[in-house]
Amino acid sequence: MATSEAAISRTEILEKYTSLDQRGIVIAEYVWIDSEGNTRSKTRTLEPREDGKPWDVDTLPIWNFDGSSTGQAPGDNSDVYLRPCAVYPDPFRKGNNILVLTECWNHDGTPNKYNYRHECAKLMQAHADAEPWFGLEQEYTLLDLNDRPYGWPQNGFPAPQGPYYCGVGAGKVVQRDIVESHLRACIYAGIKISGTNAEVSKSQWEFQVGPCVGISMGDDLWMARYILARVAEDFGVKVSLHPKLIPGDWNGAGLHSNFSTKEMRQEGGMKAIEAAIKKLEGRHAEHIAVYGEDNEKRLTGRHETGAIDSFTYGVANRGASIRIPREVAAKGYGYFEDRRPASNADPYRVTGILMETIYGPV
Ligand code: ADP
Ligand code: MN
Ligand code: MN
Ligand code: MN
Ligand code: MN
Image 1 (cartoon, rainbow, N blue to C red):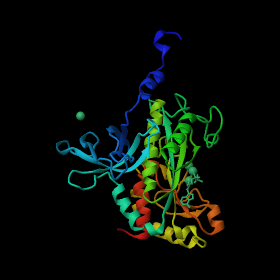
Image 2 (tube, rainbow, N blue to C red):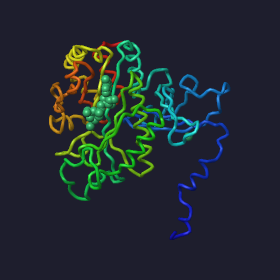
Image 3 (tube, protein in one colour):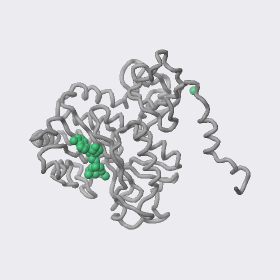
């Protein structure tokens, strides 16, 4: 120890307090989605329930926040309500503490402008018989506090793409401890995370969530995004969901959306897959409109993307709008992958419009 200040680390100091008895109090972290597609959260304490049961979406109190500070309400009428919609064990506080995903509602009983969950949930409920499954692949980039991707030189560029995808070894991947911590925290929280991998551009990573049924896809993905931001905060690292962070010969970031219904997963399901793709084709521009900001910078027809103004599909084709995996084509049933959504797309909007396009509005 060089100095007496370093005799006890910050981690140890924190541990003195986090190990104190909570006297049965549950700490609930209420999480919501703001006007720019970032998550926000604030903390409240809850007495144990009288019947001794855990808090759930039906019993958790509705709360509120100052919407004028987040671009979600005017200053002269700023209260926005937080209605609990999904509860997760809190991997940061552990114990009985919880993360509470909420929907934003206005004081007059209408959903907030940036509440895309409400419509999505209605569609999922109306078409529940179709048994929709989603699997989303969240690509992202890790940045230092000066917004520089890790492993990129101060001036210029790293060596060209090639070694980074699923890379192993120093100089090829960076910040693996964040990816691993995020994976473990999501598993603890009960999120259906299905995997992770290093991506094509340096400092770019991906995690997959799914298959998830209906509305739980958007819920789990948003909570996984929240957890990623919190884990990266611990490491002093920023997370970017920008779909084309660096112009030029560098892969952008997407939110590939894998989709199937009961019909598609059964013998002969390819017919239902093809019928669905035909329907998507007719609504291409409407889909692009809700598939994320700055997506035109990414969907160039290069770097494993289809061009933004054309709708294409093909077996094992990573340059198409829609890819039918090779294995699915061989078996004749399964699922398809919509490769168009940008990394910053709202999963409620993506999964919602897929349902609406294939099964009709509600
Ligand atoms: P890629 O080869 O495109 O990188 P990944 O392995 O990263 O694919 O992601 C595939 C995703 O598809 C996973 O999230 C997985 O859960 C999901 N998935 C697998 N089967 C189905 C299915 N039948 N319906 C919907 N999603 C599925
Ligand atoms: Mn205050
Ligand atoms: Mn993938
Ligand atoms: Mn990927
Ligand atoms: Mn993919």
